[in-house]
Length: 114
Image 1 (cartoon, rainbow, N blue to C red):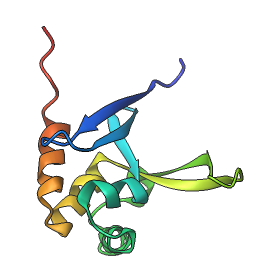
Image 2 (image 1 turned 135 degrees about the horizontal axis):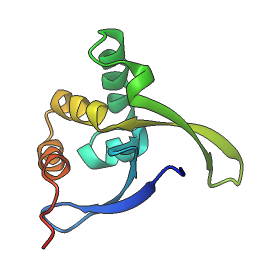
Image 3 (image 1 turned 180 degrees about the vertical axis):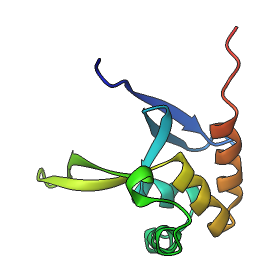
Image 4 (image 1 turned 180 degrees about the horizontal axis):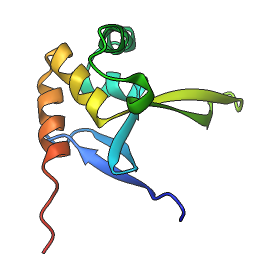
């Protein structure tokens, strides 16, 4: 059976920014660049928090991180790490970001379909 892979759009409560969110295997996946934009923090801060989550064994990297091939702006194919919702929420708590709280609420409360 083929794996389901969808993109949904997360819009901030203010409606000013939108983010493409990759849905795969029943979870959300974002890369470090997307996390930095989402939480309004420098990418280096996000990467430091990600590394600390794994260093302290808070989460298992094998279960929360995946590699994907992506074409960069220069046209070259690169391997990129993406992180699932568990890691995203963990980083969101660490960066103490209002945007992180808003995203956690959105991600853990799926919309009610009529």
